[in-house]
Length: 444
Image 1 (cartoon, rainbow, N blue to C red):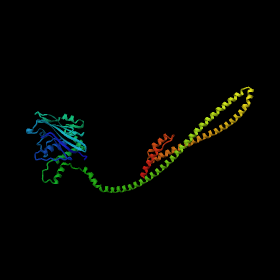
Image 2: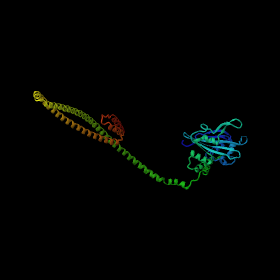
Image 3: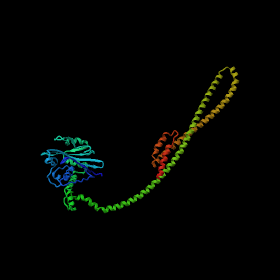
Image 4: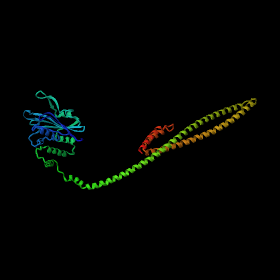
């Protein structure tokens, strides 16, 4: 139950009790005993006294008399009378695992006004387990006894886990705040008045429903026309509400039909988008293979170009050496020139042939170098086109992935852009896509 129910009640140093605890069963308590055994005194000391703190004599007697006062229950009479006495009354409530306790302390001195203080424990502590309302001491006869706490000692015991007040109205507000929760103290007071009327003895043997009606009429306030108006208007509008209800039911059935068709439309649209996405993925894989082939071919042409440049530098160096040697020969005397002429003629012929061969080889190398450079430019253009196509495909894939809610595409595409210049492994991307495609198939 979510409502607060009485769990336990206790009396300390009150009437003939040194300490007594009463246990409730689901908020109910049955007191049995012969006439004069104290059933009425016990009940009137708990309900409604502990709910509002009103100690008026007529409230203490179920018959409404003023014969007894609260001081009489504390100070006693005859052999068991006291000149000064402090006592406690408390009532524990439970709601699920939550526990709250309300109670009051009373100090009576003969021929002097009685001192009152009320308290609430709202932190779950329980009297008798976590907190005691008395301390062990020695009485006037030298015997060990339970000495009730003073007001200051109780305030120190309660601490931040509760509240201690000193007026009856403040105590009533405290109980309403922590237990009942009425919006105003006047509404709470109406409940207390109802409990007082219901508490009065019903000793008639002929207890008819009319008597119950009279009790309820006396205890409950009359309803005004303003309070009855909503009920009257509700009754008058029942037919109209029924008509509106029928119309709303028809609208609901129509909306359900539309919803079913709309779900079918969305399912078909999702299927088409998924097919487009899978087709684009296949095209992306094809272009990636082509891009890898172009990259390998471009690398081969670059290596060939470096080799041709190295051969050209070697031929230029050899041509320089021959020109230097020719210049040295031209500076010698005629005898030496004539003598060396025959030798150099043959050598010149050989060199001419070799030079011709070299020039042809150089021309061939220059042609191959131009072809290699053209091939490099073509590969670079094809690479640029392939990169643009890859970027366009990535943009298309991003739009299609967003359409089918494939959110892993954003992470995978970012990783691909970061490593696109090297051999990229699409295994993770393909696994995510296959897993999501399986989810789509399962959904279909």
